[in-house]
Length: 354
Image (cartoon, rainbow, N blue to C red; front, side, top):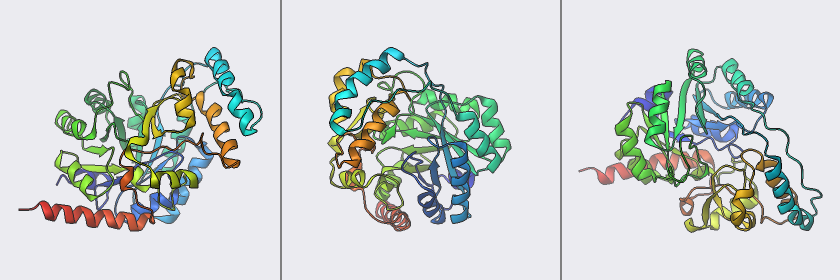
């Protein structure tokens, strides 16, 4: 066993609950941290005020280490032509859903600096990021403020860049992972590398502890990740069906009856590649990818439609992010699931012992 992750984070078990912005909650993060793993809270979609309140709620629920995650990226310039075309494309769906007019898109701006300022002020134990790489001085500032810093990589080259930037650990996001792709060097298509292929290459290429992510749903997957050279495993989709998760009830119900072939990686929901269950929006917009505004300009266009349609009981447009291991998803409280993961991991290790 590689114990570096336990020592780095101050945890008992090398299991990380993935941040999952929009799905994770303080209750979910605290349940995992209280179990001896690293609970995480995805705060990228929150305002600085909301982030501060969420951090303090996590601290109310646990005195163990936890992780706060942000999206590190530079918003693309507003693309009025694409926005106009997409508004035109979505208008019939809005009319059918009784959702009124398609909203316009505000000028994109980054909230990262203000969000990070709260994280520094609150002195969180672990700070992680995805979508890119903050300036090295910001990474150093977080570390000097007591945080362990973790970056997300989808290729060996990205992991090496993160190591050079000074992070403390790196998440190896395999192609099976649900949610947004973290690729920040090259095309996301070239970075769709399976977890089993990615982890050993990354572990051999960098000296940092590597956290395997993507398709890991139970103790077997955790042991496999450790055998491949990872110092720990990150599980996201495994926790989506927990009652502490913030996903829509229809999302939860769809996940529990879905098959692994039902996911796709698409830009239709947010403008950035994301693994999700297929729905009407991902299918209908697939032939029109060249019209989709860049992230995050597609979000208000698609989200408003999803909200209005869901209120009417129509879930054709609901984003349902998930990874490919969804047949192994279990609907139980997060604490019970984490305890089960520990039992399964130990049972698998014993079964494989001479």
